[in-house]
Image 1 (spheres, rainbow, N blue to C red):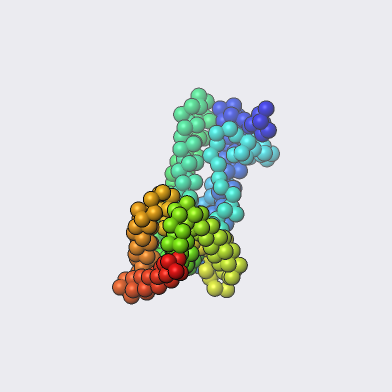
Image 2 (spheres, rainbow, N blue to C red):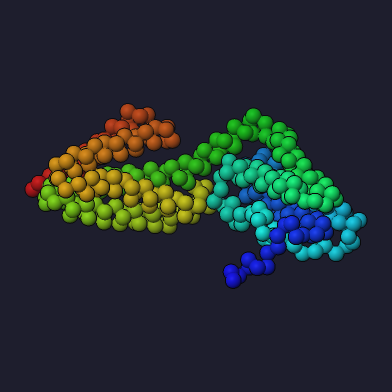
Length: 325
């Protein structure tokens, strides 16, 4: 027997009082989630925080109406039943995960919350024979569907064009600081700094397998080093660069990928074929770095390309000369 499974109730086995109690607890949980969203966004996105404050107030109003209905029909004692007690009931992500969500992802998740609730209540109503319970579930589905209209009205009230533009700029800036900047630094380090050891070994040994192993070791080692360095260098509180864990992951993964790009061709046994392909990959990597600099860092493309190509060419030349000597 799997722990916890046997204790879960099927929705169709719930009484009308239990369905009402489940609706009350669900509305309470959703109100708390919206308040958590609002608190998380308040510093950087005050207008969106106001929207979620309003949505939380709507959930509170629905909860109060449900409690009044329960008191009038069943009395003051509300059964303790929550969504995790019911098999197949929609789940909610833990609120602490919002620390890893951006503004658009939070908005999407809020819309999904309302959609899930509406669909569940509609499905439950369609499978319920009791007229009173069917009416109750239909009312709850209508209330959940109405929340989307409420969110749109609140956005119209709190989010004008100026507020939306300001929040979009702030969200883009945060994305660049948290993901793009450390990822770009990692890609540059992995793509450029590993050129010398990989091509030095390649030209010194002309052994593709040895070259691949050196490239793999250099890429993974550089990725681990860059990841830990980025995560430990700044906690993001004063600089506003965001979670050090996110930045460390971005830097570490991109560093590793940057080095592996021109190490992987040396899995090909024929030396010159592998080397030519590796050089093509290096060109693509350097072009990608220049494009990212131009796209996200507003660096003129030609200047970015010149800087990256010059640096890459010097490092490659150093590795090739050392390996050939």
